[in-house]
Image (cartoon, rainbow, N blue to C red; front, side):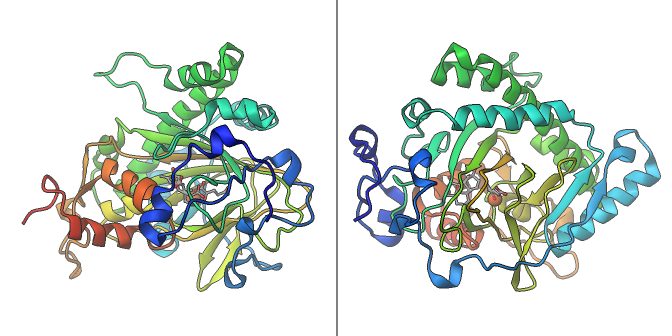
Amino acid sequence: MTIVRLASTVASSFSLPIEQTKEGRQKPDGLVFDASVLQHRPDIPKQFIWPYGERPSPDVPELPVPLIDIGGFLSGDPLASMEASRLIGQACREVGFFLVVNHGIDEGLISDAHRYMDSFFGLPLVEKQRAQRKVGEHCGYASSFTGRFSSKLPWKETLSFQYSPETSSSSSNNIVEDYFTNTMGQDFRHSGRVYQDYCEAMSRLSLVIMELLGMSLGLDRERFRGFFEDNESIMRLNYYPPCQRPDQTLGTGPHCDPTSLTILHQDHVGGLQVFVDNEWRSVTPNFSAFVVNIGDTFMALSNGIYKSCLHRAVVNSVRPRKSLAFFLCPKYDKVVSAPSELVDVHGRPRIYPDFTWTTFLEFTQKHYRADMNTLRAFTNWLRQNKPSELLPE
Ligand SMILES: C=C1C[C@]23C[C@@]1(O)CC[C@H]2[C@]1(C)CCC[C@@](C)(C(=O)O)[C@H]1[C@@H]3C(=O)O
Ligand SMILES: O=C(O)CCC(=O)C(=O)O
Ligand SMILES: [Fe+2]
């Protein structure tokens, strides 16, 4: 048995809601992902070994991801805005992934956000565990998800935290900065500030993209912007340590994001792959661009017109890889329901039942491990369970 390190206080406090409900498995042994040890091991623990059919292939062709220049839209140029929304519409109907350039976000802020990831993930495991993610919660430090799943573990460590912007009805907030100091101590005030600023920039950018998405669907540009203005989003720092058997494992398994819109920034290493036309394709790193993709919640909001696309991340044996993922999510109790303008056009009925992000998030944390079928499984689950406040009889 390959137990790398037993940390009884942490491991024994885990329960396995997802594995128990979905696959009926038992609690796994006390495997704890200590990257400083595991990254050098020529044999990897069996829980990280993925089945043959799901392992990464060595030569993956590059995906030509559409490059959307939003500089003209930001400066109010009507022709450039129409062109940007047309290209976004095309990308979202076809694949659901695109790159955004000329976004106006300070490169220094992006570099700092990457740099402070090195500081956090470079800490000894016990220190990172001060921010340990608890069972059933989606925020905090997670290493390989040993507490939630017993097989096909992802080769990564993550730190996730909540972000919601200051709105006219909320008092000024330092939600991210406070999270860092409350969980990690005063020494983390500066990194907390960097991620607070980064989240604010991401939230603003996501609202701009929401305007373009609305326009591209023939709606008022304020429609989706207004819906997400009071977003309750998730920021996630993904750190993928080197792995001596990158051919046997995955950094993040195949999934569609259950969230609404993801704005990802990957470092120079590379590892993001998207499943298009029945094959995996890699997305080449571009430091001056953000990779944007539609998530399941926006797919439902667009009545299935825009696609949430399957993707994953692979690891390598030499260099750690970092990515910053901002997951735009609606305010928890807002009802996600496609606007009537997108229903019954071109013979397309309303495809998804109404739901709230609270219910969908809970589904992914307690009942279902996000994969390529999350939205369909959630829809079926909703129809069977019928939360009375959400579904008509
Ligand atoms: C709501 C969420 C669940 C996951 C994080 C996220 O904020 C968005 C995507 C989800 C995830 C990344 C999809 C792949 C599987 C997963 C377990 C992971 O590898 O991290 C997912 C996240 C989760 O914590 O359930
Ligand atoms: O690290 C990456 O490139 C992708 C990560 C991802 O898909 C996710 O966190 O949802
Ligand atoms: Fe993802």
